[in-house]
Image (cartoon, rainbow, N blue to C red):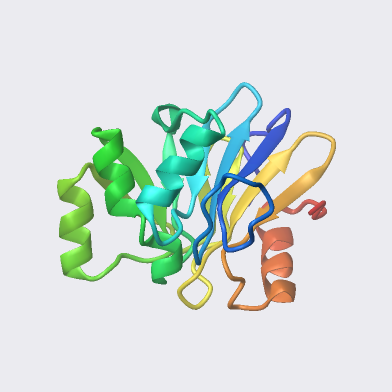
Length: 180
């Protein structure tokens, strides 16, 4: 596939993980990254396991999650999607949630009732302009950004398929060198 959009720049902020690097921020098992395109969309990649800690850290860092255009869930392990319901409640509006494959019926109903428009990206494809998915790789997909002057930036959840397979898929999807 040929990328349809290139991002001028990219900022990635770790909102939640299990390493206490910053004093005053909550830690929890899992991951949540705020991915902001310069002059473009803001995407939350994963929600960690706790919406409370995610929302607290966002406040502490001065991050307005109301600006989010989408959420990208890497895979259906609780430490990557566990905060989604609480995030949706806090947003109080509809938002696209890109997933590698649809969740079970109960989770689907819960998320949709809270405003999630679940968008399965089972094959490689564009999520938002400049942002792409590797497509489902055994239940997990990675977020790719096509950044001007750099090439492809990969954001992986756990990389269960293996880092080398994710990098190869990213090269196949965007046809560009992988920067990071």
